[in-house]
Amino acid sequence: MEKVGVLVVAYGARETAIVDALARSPNYNVKLYIADKQLNPFNAEKAAKHVVVPDLGIEKICSFAEANKSEIDFAIVGPEKPIIDGVRDLLEKQTGIPVICPKKDCAIEASKVQQRLLFEEIVPEANPRFRVFKPEDYASVDAVKKDVFGWLRELDNQAVVKPDKPTAGKGVGVWGDHFTTREQLFEHFMSNFQYGTVIIEEKIDGEESSFMAFCDGKHLAPLPDTRDHKRAFDDDKGPNTGGMGSYKNKIDQLPFMMKADREAELAIAKKIFKEWTAKMPDPSAARGVPLYLAFMHTRGSPKILENNSRPGDPEIINILPVLKDDFVDVCFRMIDGSLSRVEVQKVATVLTYKVPPSYGGYADVFPAKVNHAEVGMPVDLSKAYALTSKYGDRIRVYPASMELRNGQVYALKSRVVGVLGVGDSIEEARKISLEGINAIRGGALWNRTDIASKQHIAKCVRHLKQLRAEA
Ligand code: AMP
Ligand code: GLY
Image (cartoon, rainbow, N blue to C red; front, side):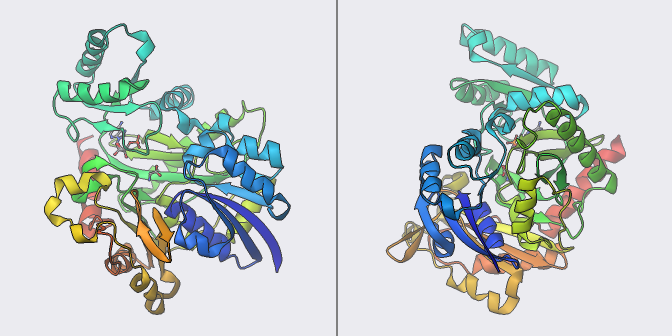
């Protein structure tokens, strides 16, 4: 088998899944070099060389790559921070190693304002109405308050507040969910505005999907839609998080979507890609997942909630384990510019995350549910891993914000461990995911219990049908 060296820049379970997909390559013997946010136990076991870079600083990542460059054929980057900081530009310049992720200029995730302006030029019909508030434009709090309240009147209060800069999904506040008065909204606005520009945009009613595509710079290779669960608690209550779990249907569209909804997404993504990349001096700059569009399916055509410049976490975990293609080949084709499509198995997948008590404010909202004796204690994944004897490859346990310390595994502060179930139906995949999740012991971890549940899906189907019946 051909030997291949790959550098993975890792943050959480999204990258554990990338590492797994590379390590399971049927065609290549893959040697892994992993620059990781923490000593992730899964990555530590799979890596030929592993380095911890807690802030994922690009200089340190580059030094690690430089020291091993004779062994590395390409690099792949999952997390947004190093991508936005220009890790590809620096790595390619200093080491010559080809890197899979967008170049800095292409990473429009860096600014929600930049995204909205780009979409306004190319697909204005997919943009919610929005207004940008810049601190430098205002001399006093009263002045900005007057403008914010004026805009709220125009929007009839149906507003969403978003900091310009990425905040791992956590800075976004939605009218009706996170505030119900203009004063409360303004308080949330100010908590972001003191640090920089904020957008207030129209709140869109509908159902969400995550659309991602691999990209070789010239083509978009669309992946099946996935559904994230952004809110912390069951029934979509609580603050926004990085995503508590996600699912993929057997087919490319989600159960609440019509074929036409998927086609509309494809048309929007292709139009953005064509007009956006036409202006790029370097045709390879968009390589990776430059367009991960979060869509809202509405009574009319879909609207874009945001764009990320990297694979979704957890959404890509719904896809990588069930690729029909060898992921190493997909990577090579992204680099040489010959990736026009990817094949994915016609199966359903469900990913559920277990998270620590501090995540999503759980310990404050449900103090009685937290087993305080377990906080800070080691986490035991062995019973979850043991389920592979029952389910084979249909269960995957992916450690995320976990650290190996003195031979024990501990939970850190972010999403701790994801379990993926694969099945012939969403229901079957969910059952496997939850069985794995429930087999994990220690760390006082908790999870949403309604990821991809029948009730959750039925509610989404009803909601969109009702909206469209009213249209
Ligand atoms: P974002 O980080 O922009 O994806 O926002 C996080 C979450 O806030 C989304 O997944 C939606 O649930 C919600 N959201 C964001 N923008 C809007 C919008 N314009 N209308 C309604 N909900 C939104
Ligand atoms: N799951 C949301 C994100 O990756 O941004």
